[in-house]
Length: 361
Ligand SMILES: *Cc1c(COP(=O)(O)O)cnc(C)c1O
Image (cartoon, rainbow, N blue to C red; front, side, top):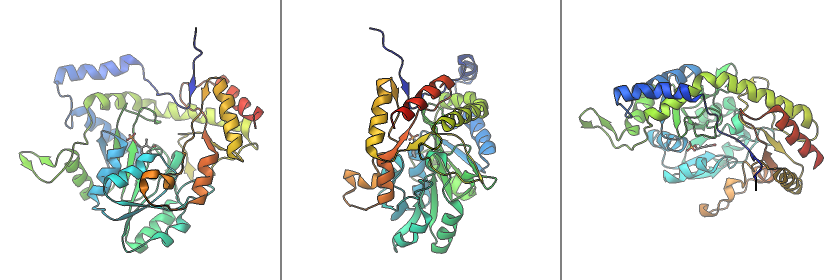
């Protein structure tokens, strides 16, 4: 039996193979495959320029990026964070033996609600870890104000925010450090990969030591871990990097097409005027979970596989051992669905998906 092609919520972008191979050829010449090689350094420089931050350290993934940031900032206590994100945000905090303290989200932006942060601050609070969820920036000014007032560090999980700008600035220029993920499903990817971005010279230096066992020259300078990434992964990044403007442009056109068909029938997160968005995801919010389930089933019957990003709300994770209530996040998590959005998705497919959604409301 012939299986119909499934349209998944995302599909990795692959550049022309010959472009990738031409980078690989240099490696057969140098035989330098990892350990801060030339391609890693070139990628870091290009990303720092494009993302508007002083230092970008290329890492093996976006999860170790969060862990490295927590470790380098000496965070050992409570971290105020959002329950509406991918599970890696929470588990990285737990893995570093810190305590996640969940603060509810803003019902308009789905990002950590700054108005609710101060009530959660205790003498043990050391950091705030907000997430620019779906690539929509958090209220960075309000968070900066609170962090300054209470002497807290800010680590942004910017896994979705590659290329997003706010107030004419890179969203990555806010906070002490931002983490990025270049996993194959992300807007810009290096198969596996991630980075930390910071404007702080001393912090960048410390994270660079941590990335490579704390090993400097002949000296084991400090305790570290292996968070490096290879020349092969950097080569994929360098091959995809020049395509990023075209990738974002095409995603924008698809999003606008979804919008024209779904406008007025579904809720969407609000995006303020001072934001240049990267079109990383297409989340839609239904009036009730039952409607979401009906639409999801209807799409699946047509081999279209959307995802319940982000579900469940992470404050309800069974292994937390505590119960913290975040009613807004729990409610939105039950009602939000991400529709397919990726570079190779066709306009005719977007039309088909959006019409199916409309029909099943
Ligand atoms: C993808 C993702 C991560 C983890 O990144 P990996 O590169 O897969 O380790 C962390 N946080 C968020 C919000 C993500 O979406």
